[in-house]
Length: 474
Image (cartoon, rainbow, N blue to C red):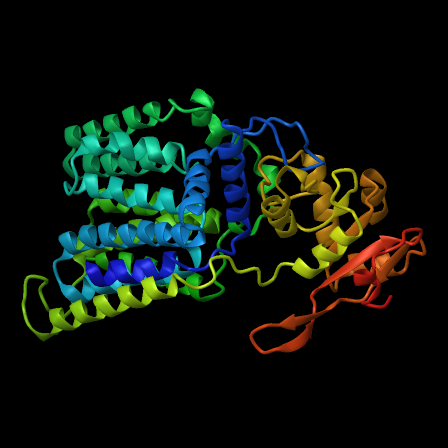
């Protein structure tokens, strides 16, 4: 268990650079400063004053509180503890169901391989821990009464909390198919989940927080072009590892079908095939479901055995944990990939006074919220479930092509900051009313060499750019 927990900690304690995290963090600082949770959008000019449900308000407050006490180190340490706990509980569930070292390690390790890229530093980590804790309750490892605080935290931290009811409900259906009798114990657990969820309605935002997942699903059109909401494709390491988990589960039920495992596996796998964001929880369900009936024909090592292997794993756990803690003291926030220097140049032009408008990509919007707070005057960030559909349609035009002129006329920007290449840059370069400046030369502090930026700045031809912008030579 300690070995898997150490690996989980390594995954979670990574430097903070997720653009979604930036908005959660900025919102937490805003809540602590104002003493209340914002109910309308404080960041953008395209949705200024629009109703906004800060579903992850608790996570945001924790991030900002830890930062005020310990800086970014505290946030990284906290994220590492969340993922370590997730990995440890997952191990307890799988090892209880299987009892052999290599199968348990293989299944748990497969989930962590997927988690290495999907367990990002955002409130999702609260949801993942809540999910495996519900699984542990179903296996009798934790008393159901603990679902009251677990569900309260989950409801107020991440909008995935309905997955708890889906998990318990599908397990209950499977148990009925196995025994043809009402699953009393599982029904009681579902009752505790329901009670904990309703308890989650006691919060600064009130019961409307419980309605958030429904509102999110009703904005399906807004999520169509979001990568994590797209259907599964067999591309990349995660996709192949997940496919391997599906195969392992199928192998496990060849000789013995237990509907208690099959029903939830079918439901969560289907959800993962419809939206890749669901792979994170589906991998947990598949690994746990495959555990009871997977066996090796040779080399079995029981978890109760003693000898060299357990000692090696213990030493490895210690080394992993020490390495993870030491590495957490490095730079807490990494801004690689963000146009920091370009934004500084635009700031020198006086464009962040709350009156000027800049059109930019969503990750720039998240960073601006962190950097400028309520003065960010963002065009769009990654809160795609929140923005008016017109804004999202216009953003899609700039990403994938269309009537650029109509978008520009609608927002009348004072500057444009966009990724180089693509049709939008070419269109701007052909317009006499716009001047597109060549990408800046940025110093790479790791290599001490200059590199050409991946971002360009465009300004109206009637404007007078700052020396920083002019230095890039139109």
